[in-house]
Image (cartoon, rainbow, N blue to C red):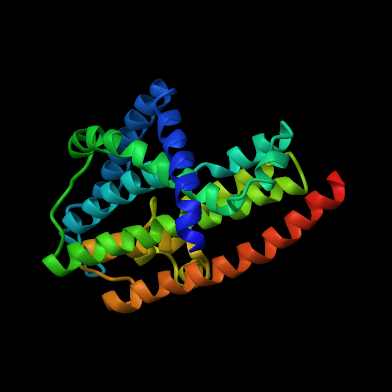
Length: 268
């Protein structure tokens, strides 16, 4: 009943977010070109690292290049930016209106992220030819891997939104997010496995990264795609993502309760 009552509001909020994507078309085009350059440079570096070998550590060069191409496309186009939205609403004082709407604010933010992602999908289709030229893009290892990847991709997006929401909620205590965002992106860019797959990380580093949710945003789904599930089995890899979604939901509920109370106290 609650979902049906809020659906209209969520839909309109998501629609506005999708439209905003096309307001900054130059940024989108630049993002596509930057992704192509990143994929090309990673392809050159990792091809050199293989030094003419067709396989290293059980990972074939074709699998690796496909992994790098898909991972960087995924990270570039499916990463939400609702942390900036939260900060701006608080900075401008508009958050008071959001908190008094009948639709819960976290739900509106999820709808905004979904709308923005939908708006970026046509750009992803434009980015695919760039990725094909810059890197390598092969078919899924199997039909089962392809379907599992699609499911894992949805879970990865949910985790990305949840993590971004956590960063954004920090704005209720401080308007300056630059440090938190820089730390989040620095750790995230490495821990997602977009630059260095977890297969090739030193044991200690890999163990630490596996204790963080970032690998569930990129490494887990794409490892399924190339036929080398990070956990050894497709179902267990999906299970790890579902576990992180549940844990982050609990964390967000706790943070949101404290943030809401803080806003009410500060705002009277």
